[in-house]
Image (cartoon, rainbow, N blue to C red; front, side):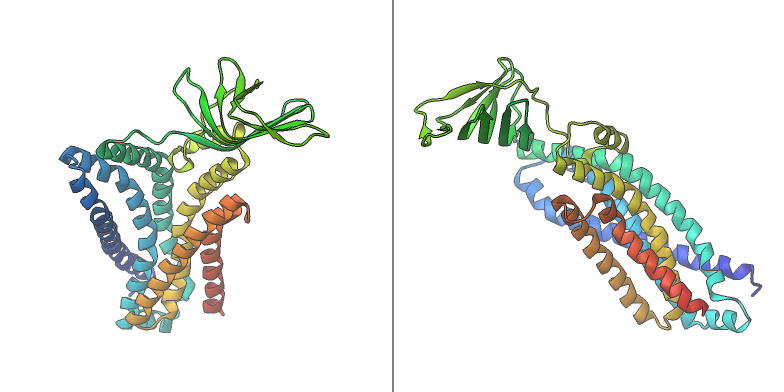
Length: 350
């Protein structure tokens, strides 16, 4: 086989396996989603239209996972078939350098990454929002009331803190929980209270009052204190926000530290995850040149997917807790597989 034809032959074999892997992973994920939600849909008597809307809404998320995870499946099994038939041995014996067979595989999976990037930044957020709204309708419950945790406001000479602020309908006071106010050396603490935006005041329910040089005492009734901040609705869940809206929110000053970490991680992951097919393609292609049988290739597929999944679910938690920089956490899975691929490439090229 001429050297120019061999890469095309390998690419055809890998793309054929990619189609099979994509179909398999889509079917498995769809079956899992169907089995986990069908019982609820039947129990709550969801209509056919509601059920279809829910599954169509989650389909972009399922599609993105399958796009990425099918890459090692396709390359490792495709190359293992060529190894089994001794086609690669014959190519190497003819003087073809192993890495010359790897680079052509990166281009199609770069296109896969571009598709995953567009899907994750535009279609998936709207789908997740529609998924939640559809199930609220099926369950016949109101949508989740927006809340804001760890609210802090510090005007000159005062400090206002609430563990949670629950958004209220227009014109009604917003409930507060875990309230602490410090004004002029006097500290007020209460389990609950309310925020009247029209009157620009906080009302604390039977608060404890601690003044300098005095013992703490509990008030028998509510205490109202002026509060001049503006009550803004909490930001939407980061996973339901488009890339453009994430960038706009991060450029502003309205996010809390935790919300900023979550938005930063979500935006960075929208760029890092589409790079994963390229990292997968490099690592899997070089590893596929080293693997000599199909059983080992299948085991490598399992290790690839399991390793990526562990990193994929661990990094967001570390970023949310502030243990790892959000941008770094988003890129860790892709960078690890990229380094693995470069290390294996160096070994093959020795």
